[in-house]
Amino acid sequence: MKAYAKLVNNGLEAIDVAKELHRQGYTEKEIYVLAHGKDRTDHLADATDANKVGISEEGMFDSIANLFRDRGDELRHKIQSMGFDQHEASMYEAELDQGKVLVMARH
Image (tube, rainbow, N blue to C red; front, top):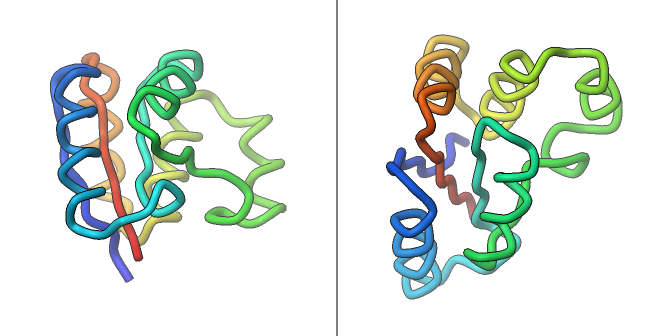
């Protein structure tokens, strides 16, 4: 099943979207944030009370494979693990490359 996804311009917008998702009944473990930089992703996940796409979403093998992928490939794979196709993942990753933030949610 495909996750809900919304591209936003910055961390403040990501916080607003995450708060709205919490109000709609999504839990902290069901809301995910992605930014191009790993540090920014970590910071945003903390600030938005959200999760990062990790082993439980991708599976152990793919999570380990990400250690050998460049960041663009890693991000596209994380997005696909949330139920999006290759074309959608590439589109979202290109936006992340431009500084946008992707907020996703899945029950």
